[in-house]
Amino acid sequence: MADKTKLVVMGIITNAHGIRGEVKIKSFTENPQDIAAYGPLLVNDGPREVEILRLRPAKGTFVAKLKGIDDRNAAEALKGCKLKIPRQRLPEPDDDEFYYEDLLGLRVEDEHGQPLGRIKAVQNFGAGDLLEIQPKKGASFYVPFTRRDVPHVDLAGGLVVVRLPQDDDESGAA
Image (cartoon, rainbow, N blue to C red; front, top):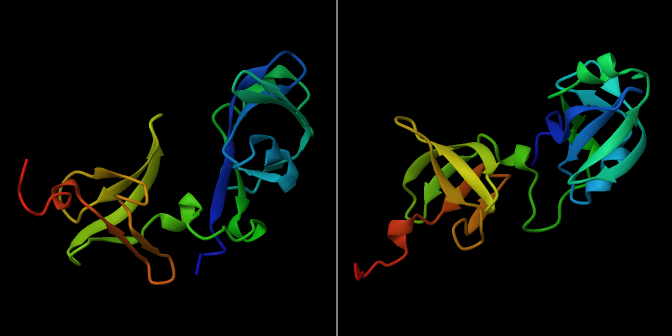
């Protein structure tokens, strides 16, 4: 069961836009324009909230007018702020869909039951989602977050099973 007290990042304010207090927002919602549909958004971890009054698309982001932000200085002060909502305000995802925040901290094992560490982050550097796994010792490593490479996710049990590259060919043939 997902922790309903977690905050989920819905987007990030990337910059100020113009002189009337508008901001540019990169939305992380499934339908990017839906970021305005969730009501007031917490700035970082709160307690400050912002409300999107207007939203329009602009080259991979959105330009938004926020309630109470009326000049460029106020807009610039929000640059880099993450916009979040409590997890309980989100609907439960469909089967085989996950909120990244629900994956953080889960135990990771290989297909043979060997512990590998815990999920530290979910990253996307442009070629698809990656699970960043932090072992007990040493540097973290990445596994593609695909059905092939992550055949089992058990949120209730707190476990993710991954298929490591050396597991691809058990015969040892090159």
